Image (cartoon, rainbow, N blue to C red; front, side):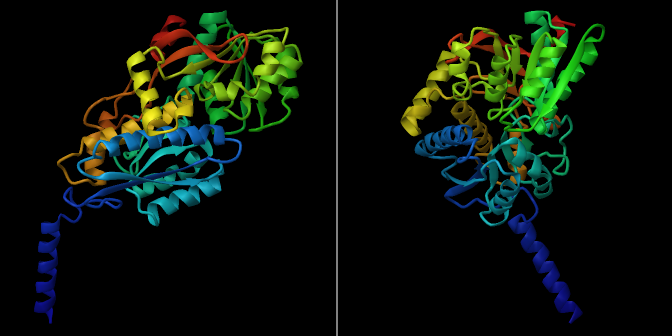
Length: 412
C-alpha cells in the first residue's frame, strides 16, 4: 500500500512539473484558447451615471478596437460589467462575483472611491490584476508593491488625491498669492485625502500659511454653513474637496452668499457634464469668481486626441467623443491591452502579466507617463491647470501639463 501511494505521489509531482502547475506555464482563470475575460463594476445608474456610463463606453470602445484588429495573441477580450450604483456594499459583492463566479482574468477600470475602498483588501488577498482605478484615494499610493500582499497586482493610473491636494495649494499660491486656504471637504475618502494633501503642503510652506476647514456630507443638498464659515474667516481661496455630485452645490452656495473667492477643485470634476449642473447660476451671477481644476489628460496633443475621437466614433458612442470620462475609460482600456500585448508568446497568467506591467514605462494616451517598475504604484504625477469659462459652459486651459514636483518647487 505504501509503495502504491509513493508511486501515485511521484506520478502527481511529475504531472505537475509537466503541466507547469504553480509556475509561469499555467494559464490563469478567465483565459481560453480564444478569449480573455475581464470585467468591472461601475455606477451606470443613479447620481454617478453621468460619469460611469461614458467611462465604460470609452473602455469598451478601446476593447472593441483591439478585438476588431484581431485581439491579443489570437484571443478576443470579453468584458463583463455590473452596475453597483456607487454603493460600496454592492460594489464589493459584484467584485467578489467577478472574481469567484465569472472568474475574470483581470479587473479593469475599477470604479469609484466607495467601491475601491471597500474592495482593496479583497483585491490584494486574491492577487487578481486590477488595471486602472477610477479614483485617486491615498490607499492606492505605494512605493513598494513587491508582493501580492502589498498590492503587486494593483495598477493605478490617475493622480492620487493626497498628491493633488499638495498641487492645489501650490497652484493657489502661484496664481493668487494665497496664504489662508479654505477647504470645504466631503466626509469620504476623496474629500479627506484632498484635505490631507492640502494640510501637508501648507505645513511644508510654514510661516503665515494656514488652513480653514469645514466638513460636509457627500451629495449634501445644503452647504450654507460651510460657505458661511469660509466667508466669515475671509479665506484667500476655497478648495472644493469633493467629487462630481457635490461640487455644483458648493458653487451654487458660494454664489448665493456672495462669496467671490477663487475656487480650486480636483481633476475628477474636470468635465463639462459636472459644470453643466451650475452653469446657469454661474453665467448669470454678478460676482464672478475663477473656478480651477487640474487635469491629467493633455488635450493639446492633437494626434492622440484625434485617435480617441475616431475610436469613439468608429468603435463606441460618438456622443462621448468629447467626454473626459470617456477619455479616462479609453485610457483604462489602453493600459489593459498594452499589458496583455506584452505577454504575447508567453503563457497568459497573472504572474507573467504582472511581470509585463513592470517591464517598461507606459505612455498615457493624451497624457504623461506611468512606471510600475520595482513596485512603484504612484499614478501619474503630471497635470495641467484648467479654468471654467465665464459662461460656465466649458473648461479652458490655463497652464500646460507639468510634473507636480516642478510646480511645488517653484513656490517653496
